Structures are given as structure tokens and as C-alpha cells.
Amino acid sequence: MEIDFWESVIYGLTRIPMKAVLGVFSLVSINIGAFFVVRPTTAIKLQIKFYEKINWKISPVSMQKEVRNTRIMGFILIVVSVITLILVLS
View 1 (cartoon, helix red, strand yellow):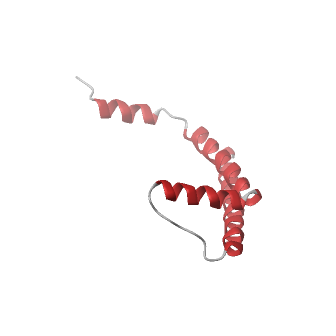
View 2: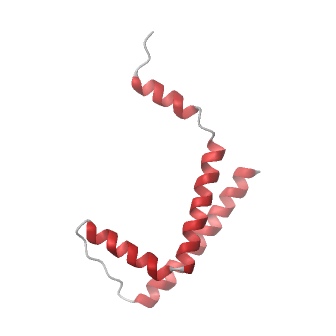
View 3: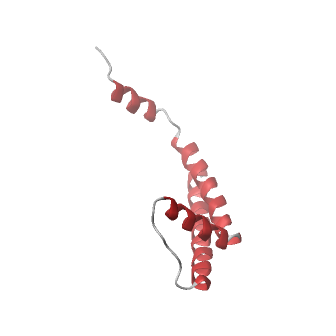
């Protein structure tokens, strides 16, 4: 019996420890959330530069609101990631 490529890929994916993967994603997300909270203006500028590279021009209508919303998004990302990490580790 010959195993094709996709069967071996699926078998390999079943061997990945999902708790470890979710833990790593949670830790990365906590760091990204912290970046959004601490440096929201830099995060916004990075987003603008990314969109310019794919030929889109974006700019916030109100930079104050955009900075506030980016911080809020960072806090939410941290909270959700910490909850996920707690659930994964328990």
C-alpha cells in the first residue's frame, strides 16, 4: 500500500502537540497585544506602510480615535490570549 503526499501531511499534523502550539500562539499574541498598547502609533504606521506596499492608501480620519482603538484592541488581545493560555495549561 502506497501512502500519498497528503496522507503523510495529515498524519504528520496529527502528531503535533496542540497544547504547545496554542501556548506558543497565546504567548506571541500577548506580545503583539502589548505592542499595540505600548506603541499604538508605531503599529498604525506599520499598517499604513503594509497597505502602501500592496498599492492601497489608507489614513485614519481621526488619529486620536485610531490610537485609542488600537490600544483597546491590544488590551482585548491580551485578555483573550491570557484566557486561552490559562485554559491550555489547565
